[in-house]
Length: 350
Image (cartoon, rainbow, N blue to C red; front, top):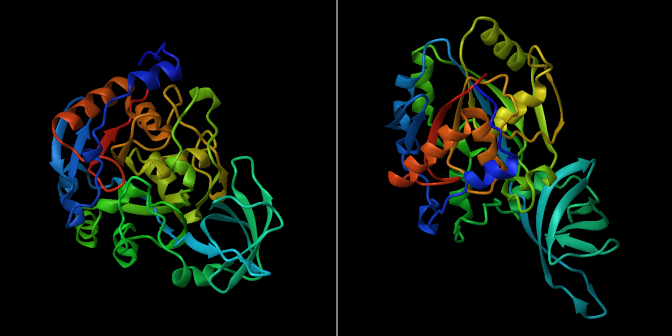
């Protein structure tokens, strides 16, 4: 495959498309595996997600991101001093940077030295990061209390309403285990326990990695692609997962990444010859021209124009294939983004 002579900015412009607002899904398919699935290889074919077993082979290895979304959106209040204060501040906790100290977005913003009360839990604002996030230092571990004081941080394009109980179930994969994300790894939302059992029965293997999805997943590219800064996200690959992935590669069995977060995890853990177990922070930005070494196929949702995710899938499957696939999705009334339909993409390697 010849490298694309266009710049990243030219490719992003070529991938732009008009998406009517009503095509952004507001509810997920029920049951989950009745969403639509487009298979994008040399040809484009249309399926239902529960047809996935027919598209995979015995010995294929599915790699899931098992991060769990935390109730990270909390309405805090300012302290009352001399009869003044007490107003509300919306807090989006991003991640625990060090013991009892979290980065967070505040609306409205507050300066260092101020304090906030999240329920009965005090936090002091002790600093500011380059992206405008504040550092909040708590008197104790806030994590065990988030279920009581927080709400699930749904994407801004979903009209969530007030039913937080519903979203705590629906905006979570059925295999989510390790708390830490502020957005769901949404490609996995299509899987049901029954579908996983069917895949097990035909000999499809599976393993899990972790990448805690940050708020940067919603950040559009507003300037030049080369100037875009990815937010750091924490990932972990266990010894068991690395062994399963490296064994599959050595045996020439296909590796299927479930979601762009899984791709970013695998490529961050790639050491040039195999996937290395361990954990760390990644800011990896995969754009056309960036080789994707580990996965052979990718299950992913349909992404918004101008997003880093759209560039990642174009790097994975090829710009021309993604253009054709997205035109087909628009023509065939596929539903877009977190709660929408899915694609099964084949990797285009040189």
